[in-house]
Image (tube, rainbow, N blue to C red; front, side, top):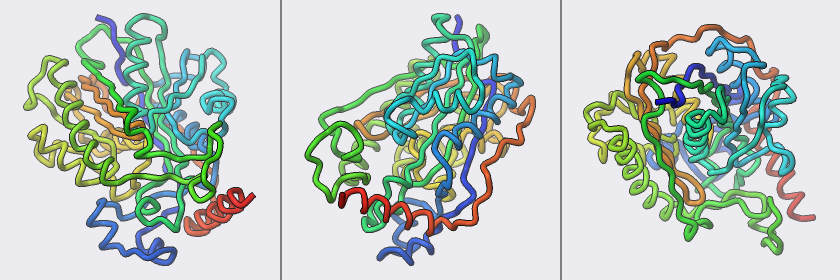
Length: 358
């Protein structure tokens, strides 16, 4: 049976680090308050555009797969913070990388976007509509952060991760995946004033808004259910799972999902303390780091699960292939910056407030 398997992986995390101590200088908060509620210690703030981070992550993924730009026929960018509304950020990635043979488009399922993209890429490859897909999760969430709202400002960070998916008819690859959403709760996690909607209140425009209680409650239920379904649909038992890589939004949500799946901490990958919530980028960044740390062996059964704005959720079970080391390496990197994360965030706050005032 033809399906997609991951053959390359890569990440991009900006150099500017925003610590909890930094946030204490910007708002009424503390390291203890942030850590106890989310598990986050620091996050990254980018000084470049979203597509620039996507290009770096994608370049590492291509090198890891041993492929060139011309080998890719489809580029999918999962993002809720595109460079522009028109055109798709994927086309900017195409331009900057020279991906001449690829069809390019974005998908937006917020934090579930990467797993939605994986489901889509697997379907394209299974039906031979695509052969080599470059799937990128990339977010510049710092443009939506309101440093006057400590309930959300402490949670989000910037970054990108990417994978290359190729066809396989072996035992590896995507074994099962599922997606879901509940539009009745679409406004529980949203950023008004960035689309065609009119009459958005000035104090809401251009910033992320979250009903934390509603999101938490649904995330705990839906992530666990989606992950269990992905395991069952793959014909596996919970004891067959070698590693769970969940969306990195909140350590308490991750712990609840792991308990629902009866997984020990050694079988759950977490890097939320270092990066915070990077939305669609969180799972591919975590996957890349799991491979770098030797947490995945050939033939391992790996589960991805995510939950995000929409409200959306998705999960996938993969059987890993024979290779856990990159074929090649790229020297792609972001340009250096002299700006601190606090300076970058403060500047964006001023720009956002100026825009809403106008």
